[in-house]
Image 1 (cartoon, helix red, strand yellow):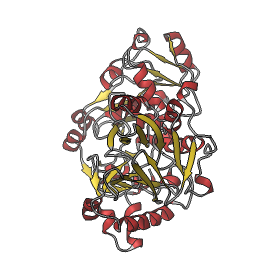
Image 2 (cartoon, one colour):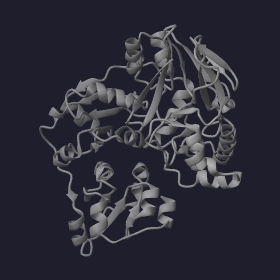
Image 3 (tube, helix red, strand yellow):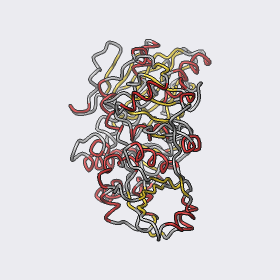
Length: 475
């Protein structure tokens, strides 16, 4: 048996290739939409991708199962464990087999057993692997978004992101019973999770690629509860804000993502087209780094620097999927990578892009401010500080008097902001702060400053406090 690990740092997403060397067959688990890495790995190892599977209807990226099956002719195995709302609607395609708890299939000598693991989602399954060529007991489990290193999958996404009210407590109770089931499994089992640190599918994911079930039983807090109600309270408390694009991913992965070969090829447009798009109220994202954008940008564009690992997630927070998306590339040769990043979260409606060479005229700078200068000006100026970090960050420590609006909700709360005051955006490092400032400028706020320094600076020069406040609860 051969096992290969793939990790997308921008989405904190893990996928796997399992091969049987004797027969040359291979299985890919939870593939991303960009299937090139799997094809290259299989070719390098002399394998044919004959099977594809996924643990559930993903919320944070576009599944590559259909894409990979179309390219290789592989059979796709999908969960049939969800209720009517959580069935794959494209499951009637000829190369798809629906599986339920207790089902199994083989990839050469590798046996794959299905374990229903509801909690994160109703249809979620885990996949237990046995290398029957040398063993009669399983080696490990692909746990998807059920079990991570040091954490378990959040049960509130269906309610918070997809709008299915009354489902998060049900999911939390299902998660408790799924963990109880895993407590009875052998400690030696390897655990291969679907995400790592940085994913919004849990609240405290570890950065280590894999673990063992025995280790998780000892140190994962989810395994330390004997009382179901106490577990539910713990699991639902402190979950991060689910990015808005999660609802779009649930919908797309349920109905079946379109093949990338069917998507139109974006056009390299000129400055006249950029001006026309902005004049028409179109959404244009400038993906250059913070320094470049702050020095010179086209008014009306929103800066989401592509050089940050959170770039894709923040695009998902801010983009309107119902309208065309245009991007200004960070460099003339980055079009292919950026396009793959956008398509990884279903931003397919991209008629065109702009190269940095369109920035020849009618540009402006983005005003920035240091923490020391802000502290000096604060008593004498009509300033409102806007904290665009997440709720848990704000609760841990925030500038006294700051208005808390997490970045992803800023566009929804523009009407709560005054236009007769200077607005200063801030975050933990300056990255989200600049996105927020560019968004406010594009929305017509004329007096905006971005605090371009991190917490180590603003907590030194400005008064801070901690604790849950009504502002944090409402934000």
